[in-house]
Image 1 (spheres, helix red, strand yellow):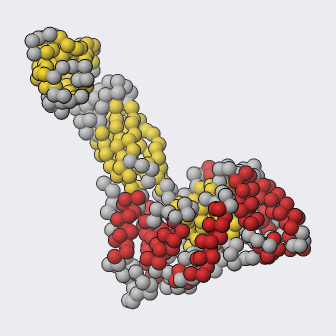
Image 2 (cartoon, helix red, strand yellow):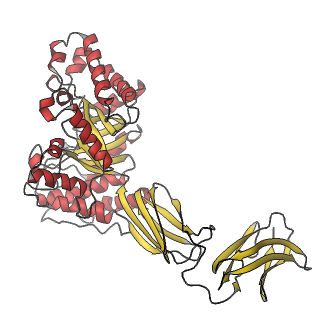
Image 3 (tube, helix red, strand yellow):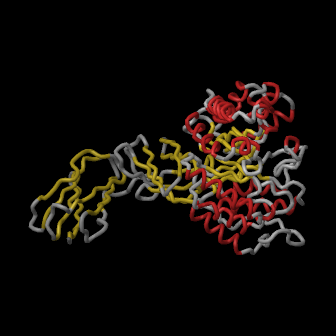
Length: 522
């Protein structure tokens, strides 16, 4: 069955480095309980034969393929075009992080889609190379975040915008044309799952000052929605979860900016919280309170740029565990994305997962163990007498396979709510081991009100008849009158058109006969 949520690796240190780190912290137990409630769902696999009869004893394997929640990293797309040993290892990790071909299910293109890079083929590649990178990930079922369409600092926009900062009409048209050009570019449009349309607008005010207000930001979101109606449109901001989470001025400014955009009917759908922690870790309970502060806005919250530069490796491992738990336990959070996973391509050469020699850091081990072991579902078993196999799994995509004698069936499904999945086998048989006798079981429920079910067993393929008689011996209904395969079968008796009373079900085949009494009480 599913793994117990509390079984997490706890990397202890001689003293606490952030509030809530203690192995017995109450916030963590509460968060784990929330995870079980909001990130796990019940499933039922029903196996039937070609006659839609339940198959007992079929072997069922339920294997998770990927989470619905996004766990990923920013990526250096230029390495997809290199053929060095490190570039090949980098590509391998993108497809096979765990060693058994499980990996990130979402990535952020770190630099190639920024405005300056988009218009400079010598920076991080051409537009066609950017398209290739996006399609490379999509083909591997890895969602892509585009970063970013507008970073409103003159240093991060083409030089002609600053040169003509006094010309508001020019600025509007230049920005609008860029958004339509990039977000609407063939191969990007429809393939970018989420766009950081706006990046760090509260701390970069060059454009706001040139335009005289922030109103252009709502327009940017509207243009992006027209350019690519399929992408989730996000504002990505820093200084939200960092610095102990106590920068209330930045938090209040951000909230008022978001409210202003939403009131302007901007199609804003997501909020990115960067989370460059450094060694000053924000307590997990404070993270949860900040998530709460923005949750009523209805935006999909993502941690978009997590790292812990300069932190002690053991402390960073504990915090990796706790920030994952905090994020995954909050219903408004949809993604956890690191700002790189290998030191050699990290902006500060200190990523959360791998050192330069590709050795795994303690926080990297926690990341892999938590996501791909603790929060992973692989189940197997056999169907019961009703053809059912039940379980509970983390929401995400699954492959389900069943086998019965020489018959197999497979299908892929998404578990997002309590769900039932039906797999059909090309056989007439209903039991792994054929019954030894001709037998009719008592109905259930009995007495019954509207309907009841009866099971019967045939040791050999025979012509069988099942009929319903009233108390004086008059035939009321015929349920079955045909040749049937050996195995377990069932009928349903509908009492809606029958009077209250005692009835008898007769099952006959040649000289063989079984009779059961049933009671209808409305």
